[in-house]
Each structure stands twice: as C-alpha cells, then as structure tokens.
Length: 273
Length: 310
Image 1 (cartoon, each protein chain N blue to C red):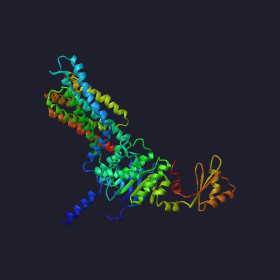
Image 2: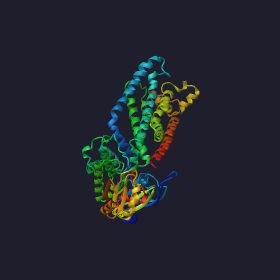
Image 3: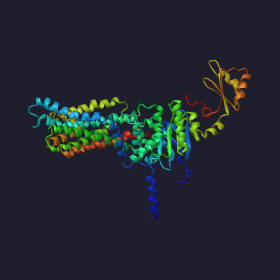
Image 4: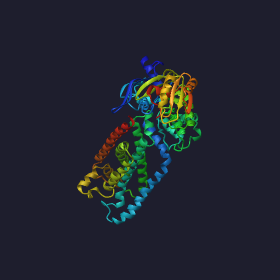
C-alpha cells in the first residue's frame, strides 16, 4: 500500500515537470503544418491545375489520337488512375528530398529537434506524417477534379487514396534515407533524373507494361510505382488489378518498412555523433 | 538524491572519433545554481563535451551522469529538463519569431495555451517582443542568438547549455546576451557554457575549467585561477623592429615571467608602474607600453604556452 502510494506521488511529480510530448511525432507534424500554412496556396493551386491539364491534354489531345482506347475504355479513363499514382510519387519524393536535406544541412532543424526530448524515430515519423498529409491532399484534389470532369468510371476510385498514401510511404521512406546520406544537394536532382522520370515513363502510367520487352517489363514490376498504378487504375476503372491486391500491398509495405529502417539508420548516424 | 549531488558528474569522460581523442578522460562536477564554464581554444574538446552533456553524443569511455540519470539510456528524459543553445543557430528561418518558440515548446509536451504565454514572456525577457511576428530570416545575428536563448528556456530547464553563446556577435550584442545570461544566473538557473573569450568567462562563470587538447589543465574560479597561475599585473611592451625576441632576455630579470608574442612582450609583475620605471632605467625605449591586471588569457598562456584566439 505504502509502496503504491509513493509510486503515485512520484508519478504526479513526474507529470508536473515538462517531459517528452505524449505523442512526440504529432508535435513534429504540427511544426511542419505551421510552416506549410505560409506556402500552401501555391501548392494547392498546382494540385488542382495538374489534374485539370491532364484531363484536357490526355482526354481532348492525346485521347483523340487513340480511337480504339486501351483495354476497352477511353485513353483518358485508362490513364487517370496511373497519373494519380505518379502524382503521389512526385509529391512524396519532392517532400522527402530537399526538406530532409535542408533540415540537416541548411536550417539544421533536425538538430534542434533532437536537442529537445524527441527520438530519431519521432523526428522521422513527424516528417513522414507531413509527407503523407501532402500526398493525401494532392491525391484528393486530383480525384475531385477528375471526378467532376467525368474521368472516373467507378466509385471504387476512393480506394485510390489509401493506395496513394501507401505508395507515398513506400517511396518517401527510402528517399528520406537517401536525402539524409546525400553529401551535396546535386544528388537530389539526380534522383529525379534517374529514378522519378524513368519510373513515371515506364511503370505503366502511360501505356501497359505488357507492351515492354520482357527484361524491361521486370524492371517495371520491380518499381513501387507500378504496383500502385495497377491498384489505382483498378480502383478508378472499377475492375480487378492485373496482379493480386495482397501481393501489391505487401510489396509496397516492404518498401515502406525497408525504407524506414534505412532512414532511421541514416538519420541516427547524422544526429548521434 | 540529496541536494549536494552535482547535476552533472563526469569521471574519466572520453570522446573518440575514430583514432582521434577529442575529450581525454576529464572529471567535471557541476552543482545546482552555479555558472560553469569550459574555456579553451578551438579544438580543445569543449563542444564535444557539451554534446555529450546534451545527450546527443554517447561517451566513448568513462562515466557521465546528468540529473542523476544515464545520458545514453535516458536521453529524452534528461533532454526534457535541459535547455540547449547550440553554437550555430538552428532556428527555422521561414517561421516567425513567435512560431519558432511555440512549435518548439510543443516538443516538450507543453500545451498550446501555455506555450503561447511562455513565448510572450520569453520574448519580453530577450527584448524581441516587437519582432514577435516577423520572420526569423531578416533578424540580426544578435537577435537570432537571443531568440535561440529564449527557445532554450521554453521548457523552464534546470540546466542551460550554451555553446559559444556570443561568438560572431558585435560588442553591443554580446553585452545584451551577457546581461540576459547574468539575469538567468541570478534566478538560480544552472548555466554551463563554453567560450574562448576570457572576458566572457570572467563575467559569467563562478567556476571554470581550462581545456587544452581534450584535457583539463586547470580548474577554479576566475579569481583563484588568476591568483594561482599569474601575477597581479602585466606590462605589455612593444618594441620597434622586426623581432621582439632580443629585448626579452634583457627584461627577464624584471619580472616573475616573460612571454614573447609575435608583436609584443608580456612582463608578469606584482607592480606594473614600478616595472615600467625599471624598464626605462635599463635604457630600453618601447614604442608602446600598457599596464593592466592579469586575466584568464594570461592563465591560459602560462598553462599552455599559447594564446586563446589564434
């Protein structure tokens, strides 16, 4: 009884002192949102502009050249799910390259956060939660615009949102690791040139992967983007994906988990010296 | 835990980076309410020691206890009770002065409402209230440093760590920072600071250690260190000509110690004016003479044979 009581008073004394935040990653996310409040307008505009231009460009422009459509639907309807996934990819990678690099090299915000009672994992979780927020809002704006313009064939299209989120984590986590290890910011531009652009071109966004030669086809299958494209397209068309849903989800989750572990190691090496 | 137990206790503390030993088995004890300084030139191991105390750098050897806890195992718990003012500013330049404080307070689990009040109080304390809603980027170096100090106080820390708090600031900005730090000290906050400015150490520190090459070469209050390792007064003499060296041998008989610097000779004596008279009596005519009291710079010069700022 006595032991219990002294345990209680100790606990009360502990509460009165400032301690680590109850959910520290949430405090980190709040910090990123405060910064975003200043810049969201420009970002929001492009989130709506991009899908509008897409519908115009591919529906009215390219779509007009492809009379027979793809796999029995119009080219616009076929491409819209894949483009949603590639938008999620680009937002996720943009938000986990320069922001991460800058927080270590220029503003050194991560060092300030680590001097507070945050752990390496809290700093990462807060940053990735913000990336997720950006991916989800961009994907939602995309769905809204394409839905209003009649490019979505099925209400299952809403499932493209969680797919975009999972893809976001699958690419943002390893990109975080890459940006945290980069010795100069020119490495970041290389990532766009040699990963983002080829993935966008060859991972089934603009044409079916099956039209690639076998060797390249397997390269496309290896990218996380193709798995999200297949799921996302199935959702917007209301059809079954080419591969199994579980297989896709597990593959993307493996990228997210592997990326997290690499990023944790990379950030730890930078902060704990 | 008794009140007599030091807040920071290091025994044989070592930090190695590969084959390089930055901190070489130092013993330090910082007591509650004191202002404790690490004085030494760049590369003496001060910042490495501060990072170990800040629980962001695990010791390579020896023992370190902070607030009775282990910095490796209890890092976040200890950091919750520390305030850290790093050598280089780590503020968010895109946020406002106030936002920097409030977002940082949230990392300590401080409620938004409390954080807002605390931010207003602290901005008042560091005289930045008028700039509360301007972005950080255009602020002067002194203002940024004061904001960093305010941020270090946001969790009402028991120990404040200041790594080179006034390096790079102009004299006026330095004095304003010193004023604030002195006020904190009056309030009973334990200050731990590194500096390579002897005047800073003399102004702020109750007790300090002089570090050189990762080791502690002397320890005590500024006054005691000066008494132990230097004379009461110093005569600085500058002679015309390429080298000061030839004059030094003639001066040796006049003082307890003579130090030859590239541009002047320091003569350590109990009575400066009397020594100047003796210099003239020897028929020597320096182009410049200055009599001053001994300071920590002289202590450092005596202990290591080098000046603090190269």
